[in-house]
Length: 80
Image 1 (cartoon, rainbow, N blue to C red):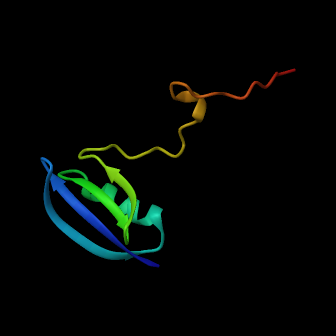
Image 2: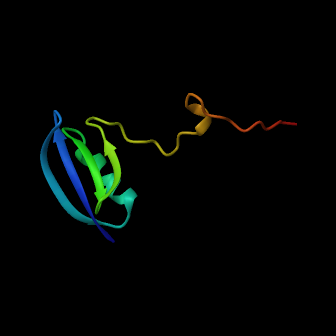
């Protein structure tokens, strides 16, 4: 567990700061994702910048395949 700071912005103005404990960067990023409907959220672990989640950002679909995105590569398997 680590102490993370989530800074919420609206129109480039700081709205507030939330200090909470999260298990890791991904846990803190999940919390930021939940807050981004009305704000842009920046996540810090102490002084280390972790991520910036833009307002209205859509969640990442972990089931997306690398080959389904532009510039992605699919494995070249031959079927017999």
